[in-house]
Image 1 (tube, each protein chain N blue to C red):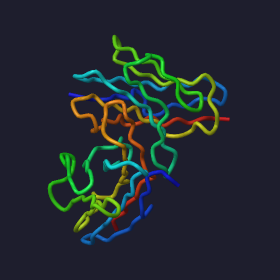
Image 2 (image 1 turned 90 degrees about the horizontal axis):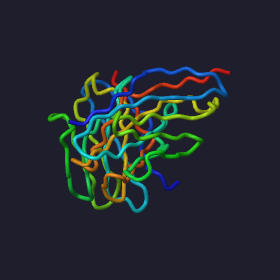
Image 3 (image 1 turned 30 degrees about the vertical axis):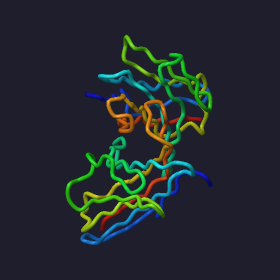
Image 4 (image 1 turned 180 degrees about the horizontal axis):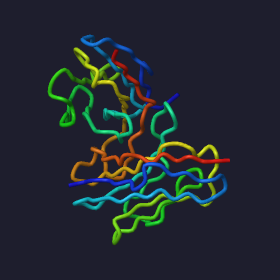
Length: 114
Length: 115
């Protein structure tokens, strides 16, 4: 069975400090993993994707994520938070048994304080 | 705008009415996916369609919900005799063709409210 667990429903950071959003997955197949961001009343925007190439993936807006197979994790990080980063973040799994049926985590709401 | 277009953005219906949600995929994309997002939840897969074909509707409720993607025009998600529990955000995504590493591109969603 495929599943995604986002370990924190809410993360609050100060502007200029690092961001860490945690994600663990379970998959019977070699996974493809994505991080999407959702701003209020908007759709989902792709931040980055892991597709079995490099384990450290760089995305847009300074975000990156590291795929760790031994830990079944795909945590999202950013060295310095910006106010515009405040949004909901979803870790998403596409695990090959069905190459279109995405499995979403429940989301992590990121708050950035001035 | 070459992105996935959904309309309306907001839709209010009374219990028992019908709701029709429309989705135009990105240019060049012939595969459409519908997802539902309940409050404080991630998105849940509902249905996958290609032009004139339903490929997988395993996430659709068995009653009152239907989807189509005609040869011409947008994909339509139709909910008949809506109930309060249908209140949610409905998102459409599209892709050129489904592959493990191919991201789906999402529209801004339709927020459905049932009075």
